Image 1 (cartoon, rainbow, N blue to C red):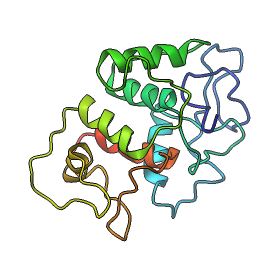
Image 2: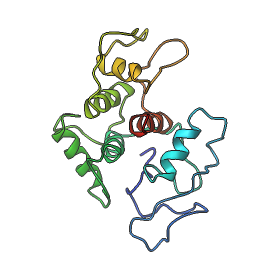
Image 3: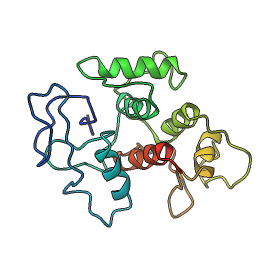
Image 4: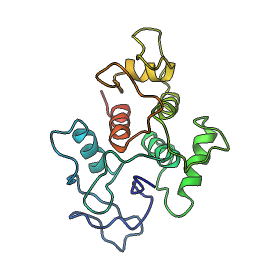
Length: 189
């Protein structure tokens, strides 16, 4: 799976210069510097802040894989942990736990397979619902998407789409993109 090294998903996160001890069952990378996250990157602020806060971590080899995609389970785990609905979800059943909680909160179907890649549209629908963001009817739709959840996130300043005014609803959500969304949803204004 792409982007498997998310906070608390596995104890094998080693390889960073700055970490908790490997004997710690919940060992995670705590370095905020990744070889593939340059300071000039649009996602640098979000990735480094969330890494420093322990919300997300790197791949265990000093990289973050910003273009790596996420499964439903990975995305729901990050979203639910950031919102405070899950904590310390580790072990082999972390994906089932995350998907079960997401289904309970109406963020996905109760039979949703957590191993499938999540799209930008599906994640925005879950995020808007969980954070109670409602589209107020103002603002312009993207050239390829007029979904109310996407527009609610856009109006809240959480997402902004691509330079050509498109959103790419069917595209897979990346680790860089989820970092921005979660950062902007959880950081105080």
